[in-house]
Amino acid sequence: MMSKAGIRRCCLLVVFALLALWTGCETVTPPTTPTPPSTPTPDPPTSSGVTVVIDPGHGGSTRVGGSSPNNATSYSGKLEKHLTLELGQLVRDKLNALSPDLNVVMTRTSDVNVGLSARANRARDTGAVVFVSLHFNAFNASARGVETHVRPGGDGGNVNLTKDRGLAQRIQSRVFSALKSHDANAKDRGLKETRLAVLNDLSLGNSASQSRNRACLLEIEFIDVQTVDRVLNIAPNPAQVKRDVAEAIAEGIIADIDANS
Ligand SMILES: [Zn+2]
Image (tube, rainbow, N blue to C red; front, top):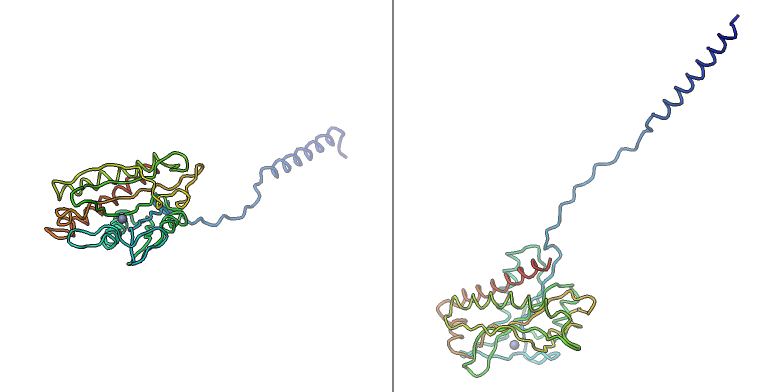
């Protein structure tokens, strides 16, 4: 027969054993559901999803939505609408070559005319960050030079004037350098603030609270000047001149995207 002290020791041992069992249960880690291996997601390229709209001015044979089918005609008879389309396609190809992740949208790819607001709407509808309209000039057969237009600020004007001027200057300076390398008499006419319908903020999708699109209109040169027409369209190497101008425009656009990202 067990003594009282023995019974107490025995009870204490049982309590300790239960405590040990309970404490042990606390430390048991419940089984977990195995996590399936995750699929690695590559980092998107910085220019991925960035859209640029290139707008070759004019086209077709009739006036559409404020856009005339053709304005300037070169000294040798070349039409501005054909030159803008050819240059626009060169700019598109150069942008694709320099930055394959860019989404380049053209307002036209054939000899058709597109209304001015419809051209700008391509930027609004695609959420483009840059819109560049391409034109060639003509005046009195002697005035010459490259100039880039932006919409002026002020009441009902440009909510994005500073950014637009930045884009315009990046393109203007590069195109002037490209022309100068082929033509010692090339002239830099600088930036102009002009109220142009194709640069209308509402059509481009800009507002005072959200100005996502930078836009400008480039007048490459006055093609009614005989020496300009010769460099751009006749001799000694008009194809190279156009490629160099297209590259200058593409590099200006990419520099502007980099500066604003
Ligand atoms: Zn024009």
